[in-house]
Image (cartoon, rainbow, N blue to C red):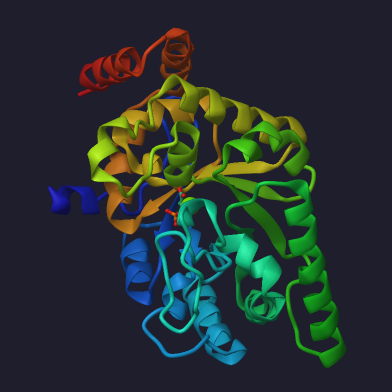
Length: 325
Ligand code: PEP
Ligand code: MG
């Protein structure tokens, strides 16, 4: 079957009724980049930069980061590369970074909150990313955004960095795009306001499901409650995409739900621009895309929105799934 799927690597990702969807890869290493490229990924929709900071004794210097970002950008040869700024804290810890013990680490000092507090670390990373933008189509993405102020603060630091690089005569892409993860319910609720601050959204369903349903994504005892097809999630997704579209910015999805074959009609109905997933998942999803109509997906999604329980939603998706086998 792997062999059969391989044949789809160079096929355009388009539905039978002509809707094209960009299928990008989530990567956190150079090795994963190769898997992505061999699967014909449109680009990298989520570069998790945490690995650069892990398994070492100190924070990576600007040049060390720059070398990696530049290599990935060059290897992508003009295809888009969304680099997410550091997303540690919560479940991801660094040995050399003494983060305080917290009662609720997922709700604590993490991700963009650390970046906006430790602007020295953040600016080092921004400098490396911005410098790499000279070597490919690089975009910056901020994780765990909860307010307009955070986006503005991050973008202000980005402007400072660009000003410094200009003064130093270092080249970079002046049109570098910025985006944010939509992964908190608060971000969904103000998505229309956030959309005016950035060039794109990427929906992080892993955290969005966790925070919307108040279900720890690591806790196995309640994993049965971790339900991406909860009616509340469908409404969150619709609200986010509608906000992005009404403001004319691009919207993608980069959580696990992006590669769930059952969820594909949801993305087609909402008309998202991009799905980003593990490189290993791209071909199977593309094969499914080639036989899933957008029109049928829209009809199905209208029914899903009328469902009162996630069991009903799931049943309808499963039934559709079976009908196109
Ligand atoms: C997400 O939250 O959906 C996401 C893609 O980010 P991470 O899994 O790294 O938190
Ligand atoms: Mg996340």
